[in-house]
Image (cartoon, rainbow, N blue to C red; front, side):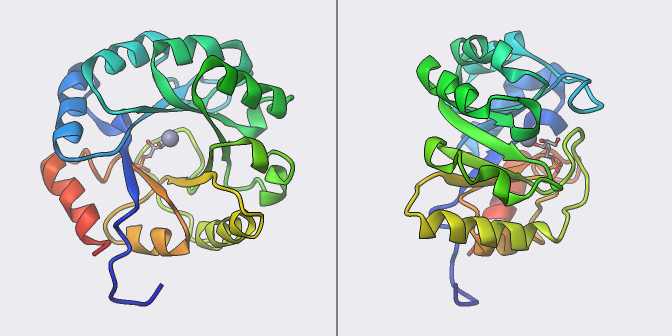
Length: 227
Ligand code: DX5
Ligand code: ZN
């Protein structure tokens, strides 16, 4: 993409409420909806796949009732196949599992689609793209983790850019349509590079929910960085 041109037109932004005030989750979701976010990104953590524990099915259900935005639910849990139907029934429009967390990934992806959601698979920073080789034609979204999952507010791992570029090339060469989502450490200073590398959907947590500025200002700043 030529420098100086807008790269933002088709990029979706999925704010992660992980960095929001969880006691005021409905307000946080209303604020991102009013500010023109495309999805709500919900980070479910189990204290086993990742060191942190966040929230689960009842919270997803409560958020679904509080917004018209589609819910982009990122499961950082072991054996996600045990909970697929319940997360979809709770309102997940996209349900993403970590490739490292499920033994029979193809079956899990089918299970997500049969339950009625779009199926995503996420890769940790150390997981190579070759892990996608066989599953790519069956998924709706690939989530490239640009930090190690578990916490908001970490720094973007710079080698993720090359990984996104290679994934974009792999997807396009095979004529597939899976969206490329990138999650972790994205802010106004690096969002453009992530989109230029090939991302279709950008997750941002601490850059959107920050004490320095309103959610609307923060989202406008991210969008402006793409113009
Ligand atoms: C990390 C989560 C991310 C996180 C992003 O484990 O998957 O979605 O909330 O937060 P920032 O944008 O602060 O890195
Ligand atoms: Zn996430």
